[in-house]
Image (tube, rainbow, N blue to C red; front, side, top):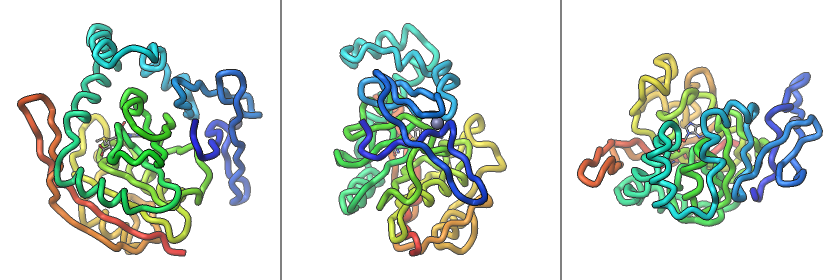
Length: 272
Ligand SMILES: C[S@@+](CC[C@H](N)C(=O)[O-])C[C@H]1O[C@@H](n2cnc3c(N)ncnc32)[C@H](O)[C@@H]1O
Ligand SMILES: [Zn+2]
């Protein structure tokens, strides 16, 4: 179960500038909120979306998976089942084959140096082997391979209290999501003043994931992490302390085909 208190996204709202939240508590095998919303917990991973049923319609096949299936059996069944199961099995293969590379080393090194409560947003199978981070992703299949505590949820609507983390990692997420500006702003909101943000991005936007109006380039990201200019309308009060561009990020798409992205990596500190 998550080490951080989980917030109910279904009833979170702002009244007169104040944020009203309720936290979740066990109700049988589920997590429940006083508002009546319930969230499944699968193999110790809470599934906490504002609209869980919409997520279940696309990804529920993964949630119903027997927890004791060996990976090769699960992968074989996923291929036969098709749809989200097959897509997820192929993503798991790509990321488990792609643990080595310059960006992967940079991330492991920088994450190893972080202190306090750490959140990895859009964590996938994890950018480090640190067991004390908290991993958030909307892909349950990838999260099953993450070594740390995990929550399946939406990084654009994260089920955590504001200012509850000392560090947030956004590794290769901003160009793999629908609302990168909002996700960056949510990462900032979850940080305590003085907290650290690690962001890496290869600007490899996909037509069917990130709408054109939501895309950006390296200058815009650097300006946002400098606190100089908003990214896609969301300003964050940060001071950039590290930047390295064109770091090789190899992704082994198959045994014989590796795509190497030139990634941009930045670290900033939230102003107090
Ligand atoms: C390119 S992968 C990077 C994974 C990992 N951070 C890494 O560097 O290996 C992008 C990840 O972001 C996740 N993701 C994209 N949009 C998301 C969202 N709105 N909420 C949660 N996770 C999201 C995907 O499921 C995927 O695991
Ligand atoms: Zn609620």
